[in-house]
Amino acid sequence: MFTGIVEELGEVVAITEHSASSQLRIRGPLVTEDAGHGDSVAVNGVCLTVTEWGHGEFSTDVMAETLSRSSIGDLAVGSVVNLERALRSDGRFGGHVVQGHVDTTTEVLAREPGDRWEVVTFRLPPEIARYVVQKGSVTLDGVSLTVADLGADTFTVSLIPTTLELTTLGRRQVGDRVNVEVDVLAKYVERLMAAGSPSAARPSAPASGPLGE
Image (tube, rainbow, N blue to C red; front, side, top):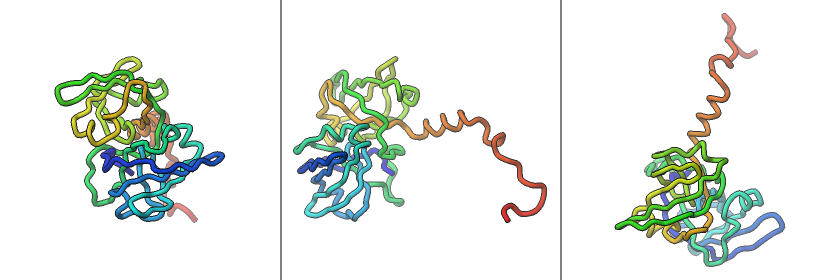
């Protein structure tokens, strides 16, 4: 699990393409300082598994499903990416619950500079519209953000100076594609409501005697 608080900006240093997958080599001195085989690292919001590491870099395999559902397939050597290690049980929960499971992608529609911040407008894909609410949480390229405003087919976020400087969102231009993960709690609520009352669906226990054998 992640929280959407980017730890460092990494750089793609090599890409090896296979028939239905790719292998990325990414430079990230901070996220590799305590890396181990099988560790999870969010790369632009996509949970990927460390397969090799050393000298401040790590390798990871990306399957066809991930390439088709995220912008990871758009990366090239030299691309800058947001990196976050999985949250430790004793870590600070700075953002919101982020799984690293991208729901879809969207594109930047507009950027409106402010005094020290920017308001950025994104397209609201219809398949996730019901999960995006004003003042709710959304993850864009692995960054935990609050929905500032919501339209029929758009939503906006406000980017503070730290986010503009320390994440890729400060570099995104109109037309650029970003990964979107909606708040998983909204999905659970929707699922529970669709299933009806839990008590109505649960079979009653016998009047006496243990369950099981």
